[in-house]
Length: 249
Image 1 (cartoon, rainbow, N blue to C red):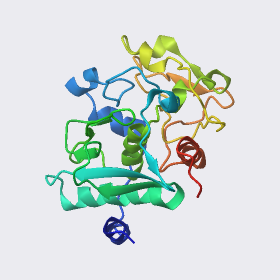
Image 2 (tube, helix red, strand yellow; image 1 turned 90 degrees about the vertical axis):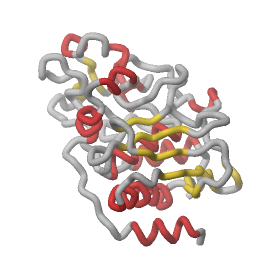
Image 3 (cartoon, rainbow, N blue to C red; image 1 turned 30 degrees about the vertical axis):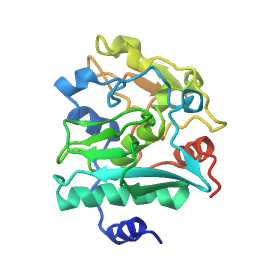
């Protein structure tokens, strides 16, 4: 076993508290100035590429043999418990995907976890350079939130933007905040043969970007279904990772 895996396994014994709603957790952390710079609530803009069509835009992390090895660095300014939460969450990808995280040495492309303002990530691999994942002190350390941001970094967008979403959800545009309608537009996605997932950890909640306290998204089959409450990656979230990166697990 690699030294990183041993450390991950050891730290996995430490548990962390999850909040009630992943999208609300992220939204509250990103309120204010940083929120105005982000797309889709928690993606730092760079290009117009889409999560599920990552294969066409070069934002996948490279695979060598059976594994996709993603170099990481974690800022020393995190507390021990915050650092533990990050590493413990990275371990969850080992259980069901071919994603493997290793400490960065001299690699130019790597994920840098640091205590910035809000919870956010870039979308997919940034070719030829490192990329930040911001996890604000005391705000972004539930397993679901860290998984959510890491999935963005691996190349995945929010579930509600899938090309087939109109068969499953309704967007209530009259309830969306001014200037935020673009966050709800469909994208031309390659859904990799994986079903739409109302329970996905990447799905917006019912009230995300509401202007009046009313729902902005409802499930067509069950308008009372609460969205955005996943506590960890679902089977379909995992399937998307494995399909995109051609994992055999």
